[in-house]
Image 1 (cartoon, rainbow, N blue to C red):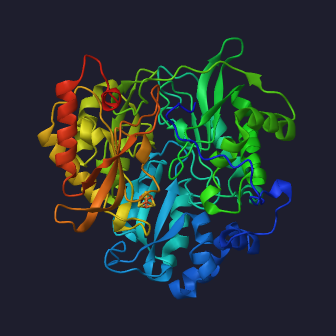
Image 2 (cartoon, helix red, strand yellow):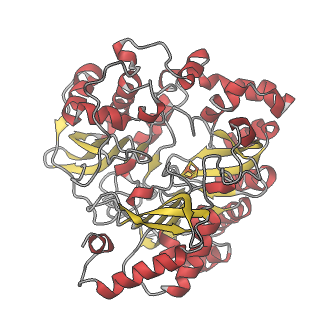
Image 3 (cartoon, rainbow, N blue to C red):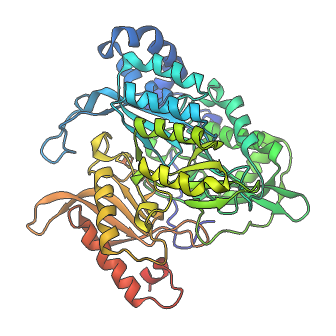
Length: 553
Ligand code: SF4
């Protein structure tokens, strides 16, 4: 599904040396990350955290565990306070490390009960200085975690059926599932059982714990393609085969960051009960044939760019599945992906309600309060979304208005403005060691300003704010994709700012935003810039002309 305007990673077919592919015999580690994984399976760090590090404290942690294997347990050191992104000082890697951790809890598209929400809230309030963010990988991410507290946190999460296992690292990262699986009236197929089975079979399995790099999975049976399937390494997308009925279309090789690529459709139809086997096949190709020599070329998209989708399908069928897959026509693609914000009728007559925290920021207090609301209103529970939002399921018709008011009172808006609904922000300089600029506070202020300055929008316009080129908040596929970097202000001074990518999208018009050299903006000037561009669009557009179309006029 690469559009003509999509820059694909450069082909490397005339490679002079090996790329570190295990299947071709390159088993000697070619960089320090590969060496570290060979020295000890990263999954083993769990026992050391429980038995040694949590008892002896931060200074007892082996550096190879601290900066490597801890990630397989969903733990990164957070940014040391005071480091300014290199503006006035360049610090060594060790000096960037705070003595506290970011911790990611994976939800994998599961329904979070009232008790699970309260458990997540308790971790935030008791162990994370009341921090908690909803990430665009359907995680809850905490900050200020001490290694001494990790075993207790794991016990609390485990009782609620939650975990941090392989939430980071070169592993099966958290799965994106449809937030409305099983309840949406328009659903093609409910993929919940397949995601649960993939998790049961492969999460924590040493055979799938050492990929060349991260491996991202998405699965949805909703026609609104609500899990950003274009940007995942492997995606299963609901479709109806003309003869075989509902199942999943298989997309592979999506990924953003540098050398972004939209996922390619392999043109095969996968029945629900075969999804886990096919996931294993794709994951195995990545493990065995993925490039391990350079970290910058280690994502699946580089292999796919070199092989092409025909060879990828052939290897999947002949070497891994040992059978031919059923070909399928391309599924219909929605004009825009569904984010499920607002009130929607379920197939059982109840309602689901999509709530918008501001740029994904919640807190332990809010999660606990949400758990209490879910119980008080007899709702089924909540799911997280790929857009840093929360959907509460199973609200009775006569409770909807009261629930909306109660959710708004705890900071979760079910009737948000365009800007609150469609703005995301990554972690940014507050906690992320790779960040160049602030994102979350910038996003909050930007939303407040745009709600005043451009209050009446009749089309959705998305803003994705990223603190560096890594595109954790999907820089390239937003109307305004913002990549954090230092820019020059009007006095020629280097200040925080953004390179703008204009007019990107997923869905029917999936494409990367245009990176215009002139469109660099200081953080302080961001709301002026967006106001000016959107106002020009509203003034100049033809009837039904989208923002992305207007941008390339
Ligand atoms: Fe950190 Fe960059 Fe990712 Fe933002 S995009 S969370 S700054 S690595």
